[in-house]
Image (cartoon, rainbow, N blue to C red):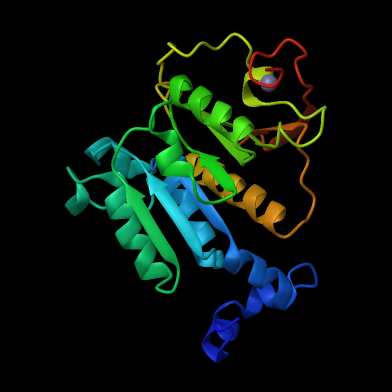
Length: 251
Ligand SMILES: [Zn+2]
């Protein structure tokens, strides 16, 4: 790989030195292509850590504009970015972290009609959106197009996260299997409940970590819901099952 020059080895030396990563693992990270849908609290944090780890290709999608109340948790945005598109500003900041990676940004909202255009490249999709409508559209796309879906949601001090591959193996659930009662016309925002800065950042870091574990062929469990209570520091892992009557998985 032509990137494996001295500076590259030095930059990622703390990762390469690990037995579970090494040069081969770092190459896998470098060759990875990840789409991040939603550049808010989860998306900015996940993008920052994936970029720092050396992910070679990041695709950032968000139609929203930066407002003052975003600045308590959306890392990398500053007061002078207010009023600008989130995906564009995040792309600019990420390029400063990792100048050799390929970063694309899209300032449109994901819909059932345009999702193929935006997510056609890359095998891993991070759902960092804040509404159920987008989550269901992304889940359907991931199932039908065999993409790895890494999802997280935040509420007050609680983080919920999972990595899904519903198309891979008969027993792996999809997002809709876990939340069968959500409907496509449910446009409620997930983060209207309030969120503290550090919990949002940690949610994005957990997503980045789940994606990196998958890239490194480490311990990915596609049937597990992770619940982290950041006030009492309690972590629970719950086994999740495929819903035999799920309209997405059993089409
Ligand atoms: Zn399903």
